[in-house]
Amino acid sequence: MNELWEQARAGDKQAESVVFDQLRRRFLALARTRLDGSDCEDVAHDACMVVLRKYKELQPPFKYDAWAVQVLNYQIANHRRRAATARRHAAASPDEHERAAGSGPIPEPSFLQALIDCVRKIAGGYRRYIRVLNLVHQGYTTEEICEKLGVSRNNLYVMVTRGRKLLEECLDRREVRP
Amino acid sequence: MTRHCTNREVGRTLAAYELGLTTAEESARFEAHVLNCNYCLARLERHGGTAAMLRDHPDLQQAVATALESGPAISTRRSVSDMLWPSDIAWPLRPGLLLGALAATIAIVIVGWLTLAAPDRVSVLQPIELSPHRNAATAAYPQMRDGDALLSFVYPGAIPGEPYVIVLRRDTSLVFQLDPYRDFDAFGIGRLYVPGEKLAPGNYSLTVRDAGTAGDSETVSYYFEITQP
Ligand SMILES: [Zn+2]
Image (tube, rainbow over all chains, first blue to last red):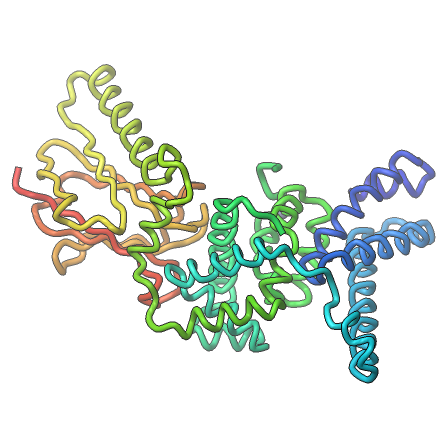
């Protein structure tokens, strides 16, 4: 993508449009791993706008990709801070409570149920993955999780990759989407 | 979906990244990688939003805690059997049947090849299809005097290229151990070619587990018997 960045920077409008189409899609995919629902679209859009405003000021050669994801991460952190503040205010004034209680849309009930069913099913065959999820929920760090399970970091990554694959296959069989 | 990851070393951290398990440096590398890898992008998008729910949704957290509390795990046999013969898939498409058909096709092709292309050889390749819910009594094969065996077995969720440990035992003695075994295919099916002379009559168990884990709960065992010819 670096070549496209350079072309865009040199004034190629078509290259610029390609870069930003690609970036928006990728930012959205990354944001969705970190935030709830529709907020992701706003965050991805805002991050793209910042990149679009600033990228021409950067002096080549420059690692545009690494910088672009830093911009996205800054937007995500900012969004989280704002959401936390909104929740605190909502807690202080009960009328607002309903609005700020959930930070995103409620997932499709059928998808949530399918996900829960798949988690239960995997607990039967690959309990270790469910144990990892449980430790993540309890706030343990990666090092602590490795120690509790007696595995290396590398093995932990293989375990969650396998668990994810089982989950994906289970959801595919149910033909549901979030 | 694009067929290959442009940097497998980084791409393999995807699942850990989604759960927030990667280091800051690994996360930054993965994020920059996604800007250039359509394969990883497609994997993220395929069930986009699932990771955030899995991590943060209170109902999911509750389901995970309950699943762990609810006594001993359902036996792996039953779970793998469910995966081979899931009731929510039309029976002609069930993985167990597809696996059987695949193994039969391989056997026919190999036997055909041996017969047509190598008429002088009398050895045959005996397909031994193993699934965890099958007990030794229904998986008995006569000893191969001049032939060899092709063992095929399903390990649900196996990731091609990742290391697993495979142990074959006759009664209680070790026949061989493969560590690491990296040859599972995209369907989670592993295959082993075993020379006939290694398979003397007796009761066999083949066990498969993830490399680096010693937990019994995820060890999958397959049983078969080699009988007197
Ligand atoms: Zn990749």
